[in-house]
Length: 340
Image 1 (cartoon, rainbow, N blue to C red):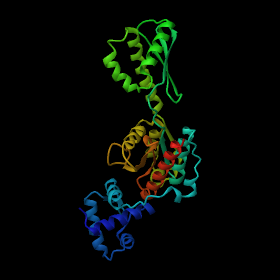
Image 2 (cartoon, rainbow, N blue to C red; image 1 turned 135 degrees about the vertical axis):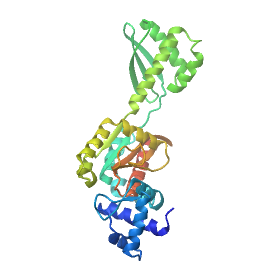
Image 3 (tube, helix red, strand yellow; image 1 turned 180 degrees about the vertical axis):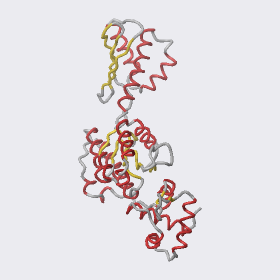
Image 4 (cartoon, rainbow, N blue to C red; image 1 turned 30 degrees about the vertical axis):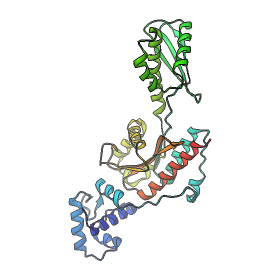
């Protein structure tokens, strides 16, 4: 546990480092903290903070910089970010061109908005679609090759080619389509999967086999459609002092944006949390690079969480401002997509 003096000095050090990007010395810290302490006392407190792993001394500099652990303590206990009301947001936040009837445009504009307001990278996962189907159709392509067509209630169509153990005539496929649509329409893929476990013995062999293949195809199609993340502003990182001098770090970052898998995993974790979350690099395996932090929040459609958005930037970021940007954008996207 830190005493109030140590907390005040750590808070002042983190804020000064975020603002200037330079290691903070005892003299600068004395002025920034507003405490009437001797340089020797400040140096002693800084030594204690360094021993606790909250600050570190880079190279031969006399100053100190925050560690991931120091940032975490600052964010969790010293940061005060006042929630902003949408009506009092800046004009850029008030008037983004978010169109509820064009969800992809909403997502793209939200990523650009996050990027332009933060000057870092904006990321948004596309809304997760429900795996409910309204209609199933099988179309014979060739011997043992069948096209499965799944139509959702909103008209969204997912197609998958499956390979069957036996050859089916088109009339058999039509019969199976009619039966399965009548029996299972309106259920989610997972609900159908569960029902099939108990009903498969009662179904005719070819219908059971086709339904199991359709469920597998539907699961794969839904998984593919959900692995979408929109990224905006990667080039902003080229001008960030913390990255621009290290081409190796930049290369790793751009690999992260290119592959997206790790990014999707991180944002998926964020979607299960309430409100704005902050992930600081180096403190866990969630964020893969020590120099990187992610501020994220889930967004909703009609009260249901369907995706995540956030800002990716250096650990030396103005967290209070990023929290406000992410929180406002999350609410804007939720409102836009929930309009009827």
